[in-house]
Length: 341
Ligand SMILES: *Cc1c(COP(=O)(O)O)cnc(C)c1O
Image (cartoon, rainbow, N blue to C red; front, side, top):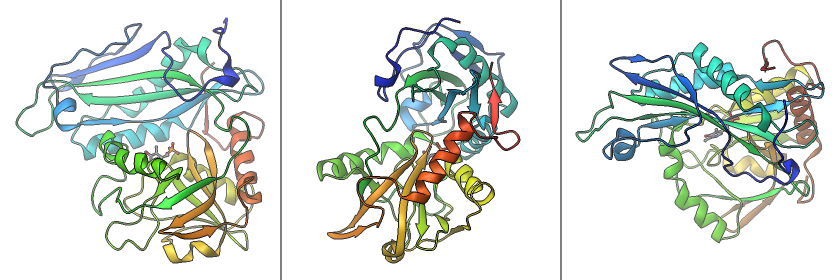
């Protein structure tokens, strides 16, 4: 298969229209067979549930070319089950998990010419999503839905080298106790836009959100979970019901324990213990891990010993091990790589 003529290493993180996308409609209580289409336009009622009451959820994952030339995705079964959880919380019909994985495979296969070659640092980002499509004016769940998957090639995250981030402790909250922080829904992002624009204006890369009830515990940023490394080399991640369960974070915790033989802890992390950690990173599909060099809490600076020039040594090892698994350089745990072709 001939690859598209794209300057892979210089791609950013933006939308590039690819040739095919998957579409399935839910109507009269059931999903249709779904199909691949070249039509990138969505036509829905002006009164669609998604437009009026934000009934929409999504997933984010990637396809990679491995060292030996296969195209793979990483743990798509976990994206399928997380999307099912998101759907149930917003009273949307679940797109069956096995069909979700099949549709991801088919969509990537159809766009294989856009999967960046091994070594370019670029990947094919995959965006499954679902929304209420029929008219809804009284507040209630929609009766009809559309499930779609598109793909877009994205460039290497750390173009021009790794730059540790400076983040601030936010005065805005991301998620309420017993709210929707644990599901991947557009509504969690809409309310974070003001906070991130404001953070950027003040010169910060990201917001650290605290637990809304006590504002003493670390939750996550707008789109990534935290990992901390203690001075004695333990890997710690915050535990909370209102954090989005990152697949990257869960995979890194497994890698830390089983591949690197580090101690791991998922527990409450208090704001006032941040100064005791040796390293800090943000994890998610986009970057795998972005190192954090500095956290600013209302003028008080917490600088990690790993500094502002490079990833900390443990963060680096975690990063290399997980990306090594994803690129087929290290043996993957059973079921982690779904081979597409
Ligand atoms: C998607 C997302 C993450 C990262 O999850 P991954 O499965 O690792 O990509 C973290 N936090 C939030 C709020 C997210 O939406």
